[in-house]
View (tube, rainbow, N blue to C red):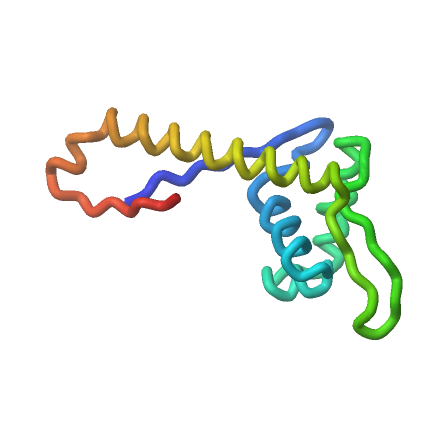
Length: 121
């Protein structure tokens, strides 16, 4: 057993959650939207839609791309993109920790009955 938390930030539409967080993490790691989508098993078109929707709702760019032809172009997070990513990572971690703590306190009897519980940080 494990507790699974889902957090979505919404404006007119939901635009930021764990999926976009992971996408930005992969873009930062690979310096490429294409490589990020390949690592996630996501279509490039879907990734662009996620990024554009978030940018529209936030009112600023999350990524910046430099054109460069074969293997020379790259995509990086903007400073504001890095701030959004870091803030959501921290928020998600804190909420997950708090939820797990509350769950363990309220359902302690499950542990005492010998249930197997997966701890995920």
